[in-house]
Length: 101
Image (tube, rainbow, N blue to C red; front, top):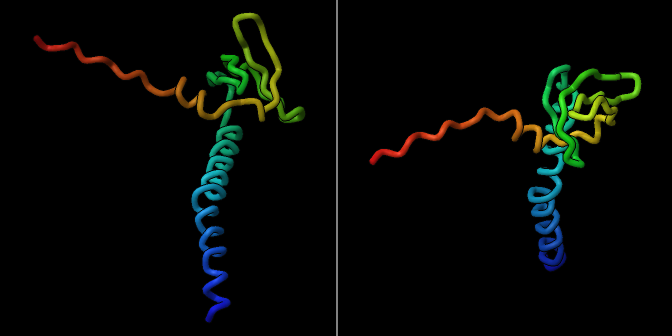
């Protein structure tokens, strides 16, 4: 019984680490993977370095995306695309209600 009591804190620490660190990271990776697979021509995206652009073409052979920016076309690896920032850009704009006096 004493041995089980000494292993219990170690098992509890592992369970807490799994639910608060490992599991959310796995969910985030799945979301990013599905985002990268769903990219199509015409989508507005942001790279992890902060470059905004519109998808001009997708190269499956190179596993890259060709972005059309203000200065021309650039090729980026699909892993350089940011899911979070793109989600904010493509979100619908909320209209402000005029204040009543």
